[in-house]
Image 1: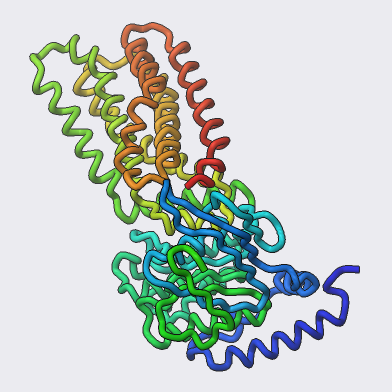
Image 2 (image 1 turned 135 degrees about the vertical axis):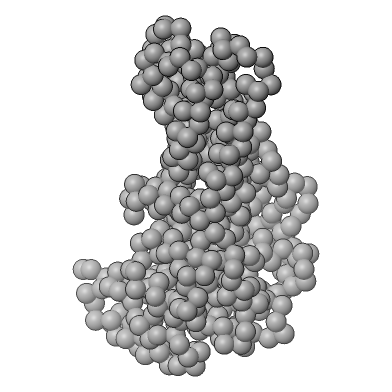
Amino acid sequence: MLPWSDDRPRIELAARFSSRLAVTSNRPTGIPDNLFIDDDAADRHRIQAFYTSDVPHINLQDVSVRFGRVPILSDITISLMPGDVVWLRGPNGAGKSTLLRVMAGLIRPVAGIVELFGQPAAPAARRRMGLIAHHPALYEDLTIEENLRFVTDLAAAPSRRLDEALEAVGLTGARNRKASEASEGMRRRADLARLLIVEHDVLLLDEAHSGLDREAGGLVEALVERCAARKGASVIVSHATDIPFANRTLELVEGRI
Amino acid sequence: MTFRRQVMIILRRDLRIEGRSGEAIFVTVPFGLVALFLIPLALPLDIELLARIGPGMFWSVTLLFGMFITFRQSAAESSSQQEQLRMLGVDPAARFVGRAIASALLLLIFELILAPTMVVLYAPAAIPGWPAIIPLALLAAVGLAMIGTLAADITASLRSRSALAPLLVAPLSVPLLVPAAQGLESLRTKNGIMVPTMFMVAVVLALAVAGVVTAQPLEETT
């Protein structure tokens, strides 16, 4: 039997869509509803995930990372379950950004185990994860639209997603502006728009609030809640005094939790 | 997504960036032309001597352009952009091929602009069998582009990558540019160019295999 031919997950999925719309009702104005309605392939994927929701999306066991001889992370053990929204905080230089990259499978630890979606970390798993790095991943000589088109094309996402993402982050009017000529806030918004173009099961946000005004900050919240409603998980690195929508808080000090 | 489609997207990105900035062509071509002009002015008017050093001058200037392209390639992609490509699941081999094709196209344009100047200044008596220059120029462009892309990948994780990558290009391009210069010289002296051409084909094939095979491990070590 095909996983999506069973009524039970369909009902569950419908309930999840309803709750998702409820969750997203507080999102900043301008985010079109159709961003939150997915295609059939994504539905099937979600229903398959429904059956395996007890598997952590990310599982780190006794992970240690060194850069040269300098220890950056020591004996980190974390499991990120579906629906988790983790606020990762700690002083500068604690290793937060490095930990995000280990979770993304971008940095290989010197010791310990990294499992993504129940499998040893492999490049293919990264496609299910979205990462916002400290510096926006924009090509300076390309316009904001061309930057996002590049992502849309590589992700093989429908073209309408690009327009919807631009509208959601309020950059429709600035779509033809070169990234090098955009303000820091606009660049941050454009970086966030990347995460709206592709559906992710895990969001890793490194200071995603930085440089954003209040409205765009609400967009981060909407993104995370949308991901959690789909049984995704998010990790938010932030120096904010509070992340009210996080359901777990981890403090990293000198590479240890 | 197919390998070919990924290659096309990367290629389009690189050409669009160059088209927007114009740094490689509009800045470097005048430099190349000035370099080709200066040497005849510095030497006594000896047509035979100029004809003999012409091919070497041409390939030296082309090498400098290749080093500049490599510098651009290393500096253009920040670690955030590299991470973005990895997160999107772009095949590292497709990335290598796309970037190499973009660089090869720029190198070909550079060669096309400089070649007539070289002929006028260094070999006023038309080179016999000049159409044979076309495969030599093509092979040199493709080979240099792959060397530059490979050098950029090798140094991608280093802080000083934009300085180191172009420096790597010079020694790595010796097996490519020496036969290229010999090929032009053979044309002038009416000898066959089959041997240097075949040697260049072998070098280009070896570079292609090396670039594609090492793309994944190099990316994973960054």
